[in-house]
Image (cartoon, rainbow, N blue to C red; front, side, top):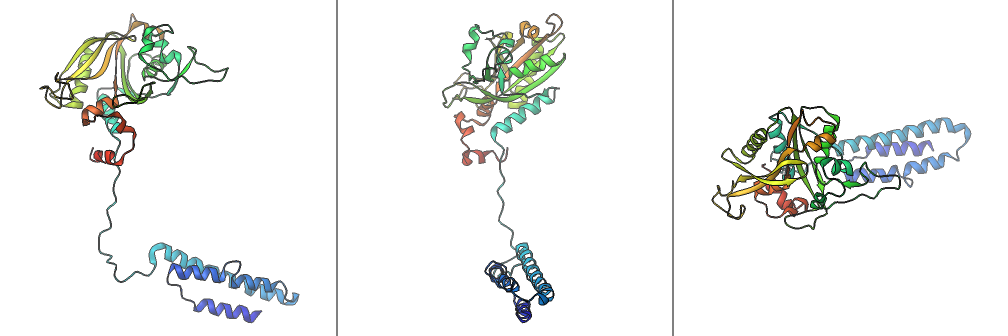
Length: 346
């Protein structure tokens, strides 16, 4: 038995390992269940008791030397010290690694946030699954209000004990629900924007999708005027689309603002001369806005006789489509690398 151990030890010490293939051969020959080391341990079971102590010691030393040699060359070869072919030029530069790109929605969202952050707006975000009160009722849209028909809604099925404050639970149709939560839990002055994903039961097409992204804004304080709103939006338009951009406001209707307006900007594609983007009018619609309805303030326990404010909201996809002249909203969600690679420099 001792001779077998000595012979195997001599064999191990003489063996050269030059590659990963040699290392695997070494492992199979000595360290597997059918290897030579296992065979010696099987023979050890039948030797005489008086020899067990010395033989066992020698056998364990052999096992450790085999394992140490395997570990040494495994670390060496996996660490890149494997024999290098003579025809490889180590002075050549490595193959370039392609960098990823930001998604255009993320690019535009970050730009909007950065623009409003410069004039004191903080960023607030909250849940996407919302109760009826915060999504509709608190925004001056009780259950029988016709304005609810303006937004087809995804309702969430709850357990019998579930339900929201207004009776139902929905995927939020706008980030106005975050405005309500902020006004409920904060005291004026409030100056925040609310970016996030929203959901509406729409037929998917080039111009509409069942989920999209919004940024809404809210400013509540004493003596807030419509002029403050107009100047804020003019500042945003010029920062986003260029310093020569102008805006116009058209009367509109939203249940949570009064008066309400739609905001257009001068077409930055054609310079207001008329093109397919602005449909020949020289103007492009970008967002809706208005002065916060006093009923909304009262629903949030804010004194509407002391405080007033303005709110606005825009679709991030809408801004991105205009900014990058994209004609199909579905491109944003299809993960086509050819489309996304266009925004590497953005």
